[in-house]
Length: 256
Image (cartoon, rainbow, N blue to C red; front, side, top):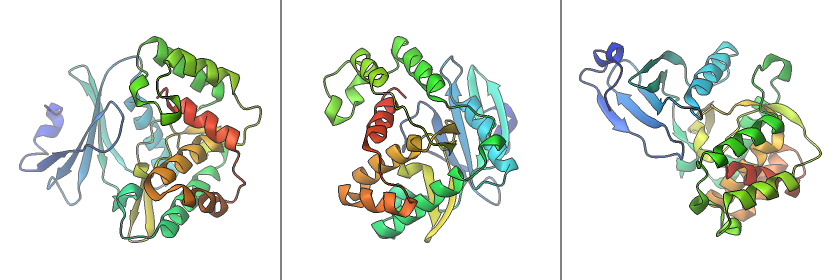
């Protein structure tokens, strides 16, 4: 990867490590030894469905509110790609924390989500309403960007068009709007010791139903810790699980 010219001198002598965790289409690199702290570079081809410009905008907004996460150091476009240079968030992500018990892990995640969901929605300029999210899902389906081979087990063998029809038919009538992360899986929350240190991969942050986060968090907990820990997570967060909304938002995530 050829980095933007204005960063090349800064990276001289640094160790650059490609990151492989995550399912986005972006390239992510950790830069060690370029200064007092590690840096991250994120890059994505310019296109209709690029998400990096949205992440840059959202991180800037988070930085302004002192919400814990990466600090944007620079952003540019070069060689038909978007580029973001940001600080590293201390610690490890929650999927890589064998040093803590499942009960500690779900407590950290529930606390982090409650804190984000309590940010006043009038302060957030990013709309992730169902109308907008479903429209993007449809656009991605028509563009051939939905990976049918990566569907959850209960949708194996189905087409994206069939899944989209199910999505429209199961749209929830109730929403509890809040500032949501948008991709609330364990790898997108950082901790050091037993302390939450920040939100990462925030390109889908915006005002949405809290179940946009709770559904993906519950699915991630089940995959990483086991199904027995899903109910304790909802107790720690403080709501009774709405299984229809959980199913809907997990289905919506198939399109992203």
